[in-house]
Image (cartoon, rainbow, N blue to C red; front, side, top):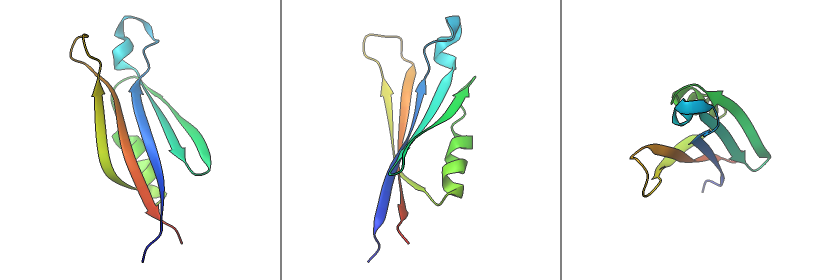
Length: 87
């Protein structure tokens, strides 16, 4: 039987950098050891962050996207649920 530890990668619109605020994205990794802020991208580019988590042994098993109601149809955040086996 495999024991797992769980984490999540939150990738959300920063909402702070001028008129193109929905184009700036910030990555935050939550894991058993705490919270790591992985920086802000000038465009949606979550593949770099997923590869970083994968290099540390994390497997993404679920993806949830969120849109804000009553706002223009823009993606505002994506959360990846992750896990890795406990050695």
